[in-house]
Amino acid sequence: MYESTTQMRVRYAETDQMNVVYYGNYAQYFEVGRVESIRQLGYTYKDMEASGVIMPVVELHVKYLRPATYDDLLTVKTQVRELPVGHRIEFYQEVFNEKGKMLTSGKVVLYFLELVSRRKTSIPEILRQRLEPYFEGKV
Image 1 (cartoon, helix red, strand yellow):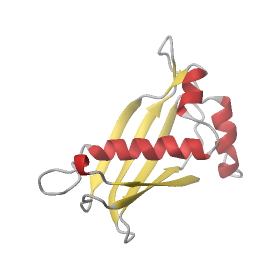
Image 2 (image 1 turned 135 degrees about the horizontal axis):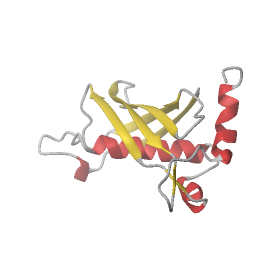
Image 3 (image 1 turned 90 degrees about the vertical axis):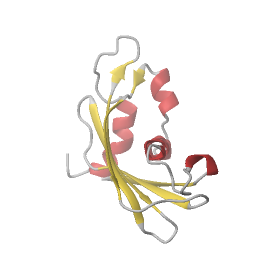
Image 4 (image 1 turned 45 degrees about the vertical axis):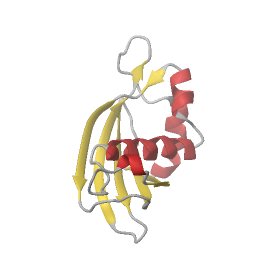
């Protein structure tokens, strides 16, 4: 299993009148976690797009447990629990506050598509190679 963490601070503009992070912003927090998890592997979304592959979100599941508020330092934990073998990748994500309390959890499913044709394609070889060591003995 591959796991990474990314931290970010809640900005004022991300909160509502109750000083609570607006629920829709968690999709962006999850995105930051996914992008940074791939970057931590030594690859980037930008590299992937330059190679002709895009990754649209096709499913988003979120469970809200506790609120985050303005200026909280959040930690987004991102996991890939299975090595992708086809056109689909699943990211499991959790958001924690500074006290280590889980605020939100979710799963995001993305497809690998060819940039021009928008047809499903398999995981880019370089990304597969970077993820593979985390799944040795489980493939």
